[in-house]
Length: 323
Image (cartoon, rainbow, N blue to C red):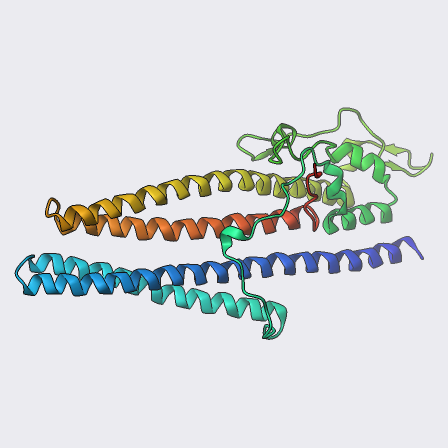
């Protein structure tokens, strides 16, 4: 097989792998969007029922002369908030389901098991600490770029030494290592890695001589490889950063939602006892509904980020060792 034919063959193989990874990534994203819509719809429907009951109580109190028409209208506005949100969520659910069906190319089996809630769809094991960056050499785009180097008769080992950082991707907690974070400067805008020595990437014999890193960068295959490596490390860095910060955001939102739930409970008690007007209940209920919806959305974002990280690592998340 000639070098050109070999390069074309591997380009096709890695292109298929890349397409498969993209499909997995997109399908996971659409699935999580559908699950988010389902959970938010369930919340909106439960909230709607509760507010319908509240509106009936407010109407009886109005008819009995206990409260003013203002309280009844405010209760009505709470109801319309849930109704509006529910209609929008049903549209989002339909769009997400259609996206899933399009990606799988058909309808879902009838015997599909019940879906787990988003809060239960987490990895069974934590991400391994000190994952080597060599994992990224299995990414289809990097493998394809290295095949282009081989087709151009370049020394792949020298190219890796020049442009591929050999570091740990994760730290002790499975989040981004300081080595990975240090690859990007100026708030992540600048790539900070470069070869410490001048390596002969091309060695075409005495007639051509050795081409060093600086000169080799002018070659299309080398420039493509360098850019591909940088993009790979950037995607992993973004995924690991998102994994950490979204976990922190979900935890904070859980605390905020529970606090808002207690505020709403106290507001209802104060209103029943006549020490607060209905405006206090209105604000508390609206804030609670928004907080609960935001928590579901954040959980979906956390899972979506994990799917992106899976793709960024070339199709796998090596688990931490057991015991």
